[in-house]
Length: 339
Image (cartoon, rainbow, N blue to C red; front, side):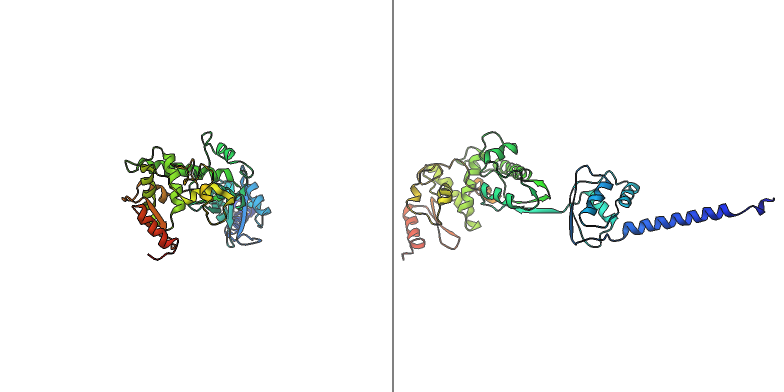
């Protein structure tokens, strides 16, 4: 039989195979770029450590999507991202495609929660907030302050008060409370170290820890930010003169749960090493978590000889160089007596 009379079915079969293959590729591409069906939007889900593309997709499907683990595996394999998937917490919204999802997990573009620690909080308030925060592994719950400090790597015997920098901390779901505490502790170490290295010379403070203690007192005393450096200067002047600090917040800290909301004369005599009315010098530890502004105020105080200040009642303070001037200010702003 001559060659031009040979059957043409192999060519047709090959053409059919190519057409089917192209159709499959097109269908796969359409699937990869089409929105995933979500049971809720936005949808939060987590991927466990050690997950492959297939097991990650199984987890995503189990947490509220209609994604195909088999197709997702092939998408990851074909694009070379199968080994790049990162564990963590994620959020996707309506319109997200399998390709979008794969890129998000390959980047580790996690959905993060946040906890804000205000300046002036105590260590106990910070821990309480962590215990109540959603999405955390509450591994610090029930631990004492000493145990927490040990777990985050602080030197033995380090008191926890004051050693955590007030800031907003982002975290992924299922993160550790201790990990957040460790970050805040390390942040405070960095802030304090940098501030201490750039301090004004001639201060009556001998260690960074003393600066941290005084900064915590300034933090609790300051009602108006513009007064902060003057308040710091008053306390530093009193330290130089050997005068007690006479800071109400230290007494409030000493009283703890016994504080009723108003200090009495009896309160000012409470037997405590934190009572700066009956003890000279600094309290033994910080009384709160000071922010950077208070640390800077202590290490770069205002140029004043004032030894006293009293609150006006509007957040600002009146500063006095002498006891007579101070008593007059107390009469006017505290006792409400006319001059």
